[in-house]
Image (cartoon, rainbow, N blue to C red; front, side):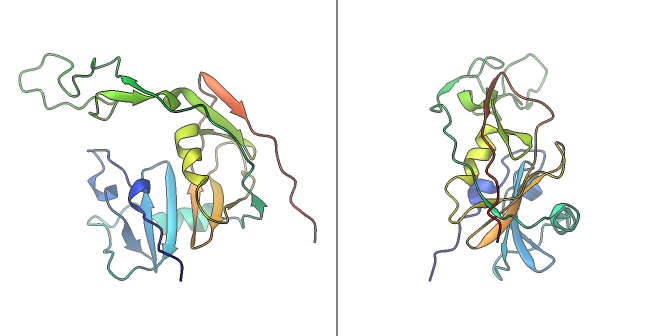
Length: 187
């Protein structure tokens, strides 16, 4: 028996989206999303619905799903390096003067550091994706992808034990890597 995928890395840490901080059950499946990558697995009875019954993840799949048939093309990303956040200077949320500063630093999500991958995009299957989210596909067992319907539609993917959607970027980032396309095998 295969060990169940840990859905926690696919959950959001955004303080404005607390309903995405944990996996949730909806429409007969269990989901996890950070708003950029959405993963769907077989229903896990111990996972509850989201408190506000959002997002409507099942509707995204109904609208954007196409059967992934191509293996994920291999791509290599630069080594990730963490550096001090230029916005808050590593001070996390105390980066400006206001009377009761409880503001969060959007640049680093109150971590004080940012990833070097924040400036890297990947051209994959007809669209552009943030490297830090495309990288999350690589370790999934048996990963397969479908070409993007268009440059602004999510890219469907499937893996042994589940499936998902990866949201595209509108344009490339400062450092861009184009991944050569793989032509699906004909039966």
